[in-house]
Amino acid sequence: MSHGHDGHRSTHREGRGTHAHATSGRHTLGHDSRPRHDDAGQGLDAAAPTGRRAVVITASTRAAQGVYTDRSGPIAVERLRAWGFETPDAVVVPDGPPIAEAIRAALEQRPALLLTTGGTGLRPDDRTPEMTRPLLDVEAPGIAEAVRAAGVAKGVPTAMLSRGLAGVTRGTLIVNLPGSTGGVRDALDVLESVVHHAVDQIGGGDH
Image (cartoon, rainbow, N blue to C red):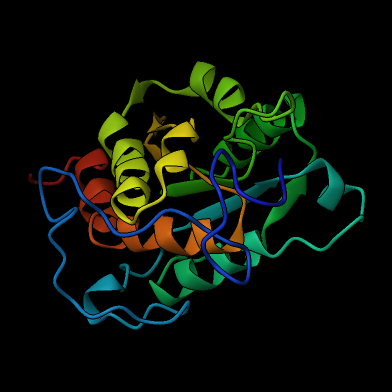
C-alpha cells in the first residue's frame, strides 16, 4: 500500500484523501442531502440494526512491519461502530497474498460488511483488487465507481487511477477503500447513504 494516496494526489492535510461524496447510484447514493459530520458519523439513519457485524482489513506492508502506525483502519472502524455495526479493531496485513488470506478468514465470521483499506493504486505492490476479485460471487461496480467519480468531481482527476472493487461474497458486502485517511473518510461518506440498504438487499430485503 502506498501510505499517501492509492492512485491519487493528496488533498487533505491528514491522510490526504481524494475521494469525496457520492455522485452515482440507483437509490440514495449521490443524492444524500444530509449535512456532513465528523468521523464518528452521527447521522440518525446511519445506525445499523443490532447484531450486524463488520470487519476492516488494512493492506500495508510498512504498517504490518511496524514502520508506521495504521491510521486508516481505525477511522473506518470508528465510523462503522458509530453506524451500529459490531466491529473489532482493524486487522493489518502486508500487501499481496496476505490480503486474500485475511479476507477469507474474515468471511468465516459471516460479517455483513467487510472493508479493506489500501493497495488500490498503480504501484507494483498495490494488489488489493487482484486479491479481492477471485473471492467475489458478484461485483457491485457502481459503488466503486461512485467513490472514484466523487474524487474526480472534487477536482482531483487522479482519483480515477484507484482500482478498488466492490461486490458480494457469501452474503457479505466487500468494498476496497483507498489507503489514506482522507480517502477513507470520503469513501465512507459515499457509503453511508447506501450501505444499510445494500446489506438489506443482500439479505433478501425489499428493494
